[in-house]
Amino acid sequence: MTKKHHALKGIALITLNTSAVLILLLTGLNCNRPDTRTFPKRMDDYQRTRIITGEEAGRIINRLHENPVAATRNEIGLYENDRGQAMIYVSYYKDADEAEQEWQRMIDKISIQNSVFIEGTVFLSGQTSVYRCFGLGQTHYVFTEGDRLFWLSVETIGAARILSDYLVNLGE
Image 1 (cartoon, rainbow, N blue to C red):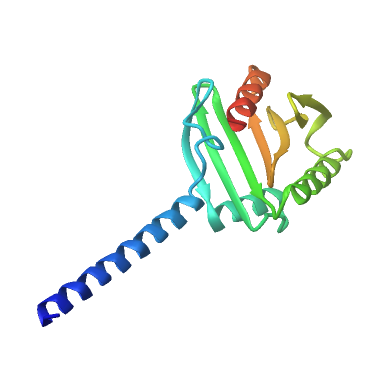
Image 2: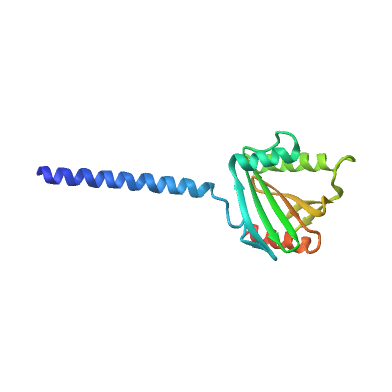
């Protein structure tokens, strides 16, 4: 084999290795990108305006609770229409059992008498157990799906329809 062939073979290996690294990086980045089923562009007449991830999402969740309660991975979807805002908070846990335990712990805490949330109740929407309460001018739904815990806050008029549509799309 000539020096030219060795040089071309070396360049081909470098190019192949660089391509493999780029593919792995892009795949890894894509895994951390929020799922469009979790944060659809639209929910009814609400338009998605922003998705917050990473440390910023964790800080927001901790600030809302005035305590460090955020999971290791969190995401927040912000939506708007001409009447106001809707939000979806998502926290990821190691498995479905842990997400379910956190769901139960959360509804136990917000069910107490000194909570800003009222009229809490659990109901089934399809196969999903959902905790619904009212407060701060909105309807709030808390539920799990796999290893994720969701909190959906939306204006009360049309809230049940938005939840139902959201759960159907989430399960696709």
